Amino acid sequence: MSRFPRLAVGTIQPGVDATAIIWALMDSLETMGLRVQSFLSRACFVSKDGATAITGLSPRHLDSWLMSEDLCRELFLRGTAASDFALVEGRFAAAVELADAQGGDLETLCRWLNLPRLAIVDASLVSDCHVPPRPDQVDGLLLDRVADSTQLIRLQTMFESLWGVPVLGSLGMIGDLRREIKNLAPGAKPARELCAQVRDQFAQRAQLDRIHRLACSRDLLDSRPAECVRPEGPALQVAVAYDEVFHCYFPDMLDLLELKGATVRDFSPLRDERLPPNTDIVYFGCGHPERYARELVENHCMMLALKDHLCNGLRLYAECGGLAYLCQRLEMPDGESLPMSGVLPAVARRNPYPEPPRAREITLSADTWLGPAGSRLRGYLTSHWSLEAAGPLTCFAKEPPDEPALVGRHQAIGSRLYLNFAAQPSILSSFFRPHAPAIDPTAPVARSTDG
Image (cartoon, rainbow, N blue to C red):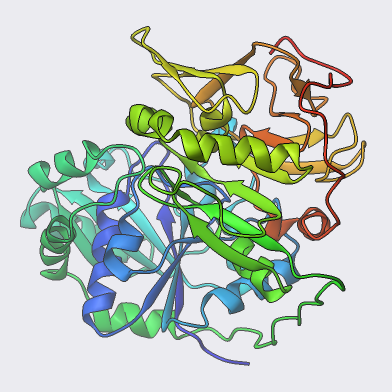
């Protein structure tokens, strides 16, 4: 058993954005000399990545809907190997709205990892007549959007007397700083100065020593991560698209590929003219190809290299923004149409008002290199892009019928789901299977969809 410092931190009121105070807490812990590893309680990507800017470590993902308890603990232990403190972010049960009820939840992670719970209360939503229900389990409180010192004293007295829980920190209204955070582009990292300003406001009233003691107060089952079995045969070569355009990946997925013996190398679709030598699988993560469409389409050599890769019977996987890059065209909300790589015969349309990702389980309707027909995959369906087939495009998912989630042609597979393969070992193992023989690029596919 060990007492590795760790906290679950999350909101208890629906619809509350706690980004500012979580960043402030994270940055304050870093100033104490702690290396903080952030974990998200769902296998989805955040729209504003403050954790990487503050800690230098990309957020990792735990998910009680995707993972077993043992696998969750294993990924937690692997993920904290280079850190001194773990912060597991999410929403406690009272803050989860009905539409988000399916999927991973913070409460289950608290039980599995024996996490102390630090609840965030939005003070602007609290009045004498409207106090949120007390959670069944809570070890400390953070008050956010506190109007002034008078309100802070009143709320601290009220919560500590009624709930018997200490208030361990607070953050004021900080209107200008919150507006800067809100106005960050999706996927953007905040300036280090912005994070420091929010931290300084929080640190004035934060009891960091008590927060650290709380984080060290629980035992954790100290088991060693399972050893990864390396498949026999030649080492797998995986080329990962990584630059200003594509940068959203599940770190555990990349770690496990390497632990199983794969060689993972990055390349830039913006600047590189060819793929890394001897590439078996090309992997495109999420990103924003619409922001760099002209630069991407001017790199003719890279687009030719991708098509040659597929013509040689080799494999390609892309999701969300990576899938959009593989299409023939991007269509923007203002009607602008931008050419793309043309690997897949489809048009990707950008949704100006995407909804939060939704938990989905799909069944493969045909054999693919990810798995045989009938295999089930779990992930989070995004609405950032919709697809319309412009040629023979195979739909590999039986459901949902009105939202093609997994499509492809030949050995190229594109997904509108966030798929964390580290949470689905049987799918991850499919990366190590031998690739198919070379294909005739003009050959028809067996089945198509109208998108």
